[in-house]
Length: 131
Image (cartoon, rainbow, N blue to C red; front, side, top):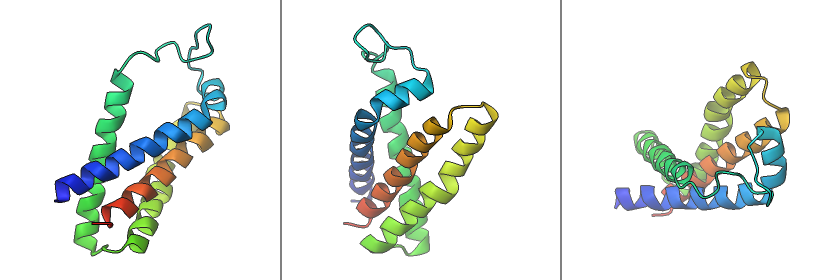
């Protein structure tokens, strides 16, 4: 059951990411410098590798969060949501902010990507505690 829990949490976070980046596609593409085609879409949009990697990483994050939650006794929706939010906001996002700072990435890109990290982690945390 725990494996299924991890997969469902990863799918939920991945789906959130799809919506997040669809809504913020234009500012994200501008800030990230992703090459776009004549249609205004990313030039590599037909390449499945980034999507496969993104889902695999969501599974890894959900699996580790499940492990942390199990060891910490995080077993309710509220605790899962807040713990996931905290992991995204106070553990994962600072590392990305540091990397983006040294590489002089635009602050808009930092906000978009750390927003996904924070809310995606909160979703994983909430879903992990649902069953």
